[in-house]
Image (tube, rainbow, N blue to C red; front, side):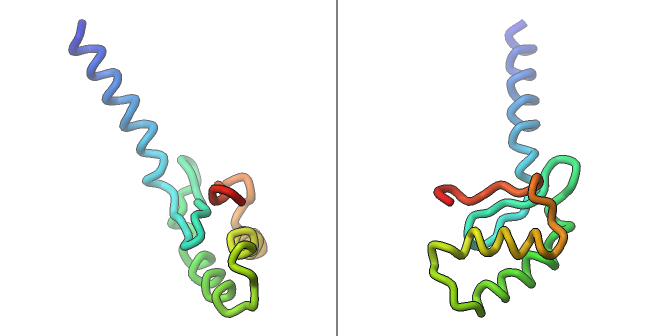
Length: 87
């Protein structure tokens, strides 16, 4: 019975931790993607938006929000985005 509990806890931990394996994170802490729509699908948009964000004259505190908006403008769904902490 104890082995069954340990196995159940291990499977649950892997399932919860596995979701982050399907996400990508930009340099500002925003995460894109999820279990059903993998973040790797957005790698091109993330590279493009990071270049645009770095090239724009934007205050550092506004860069995470600008990055999320840029990703949305390039087709990344907002409901598939996790905002950076504190933004």
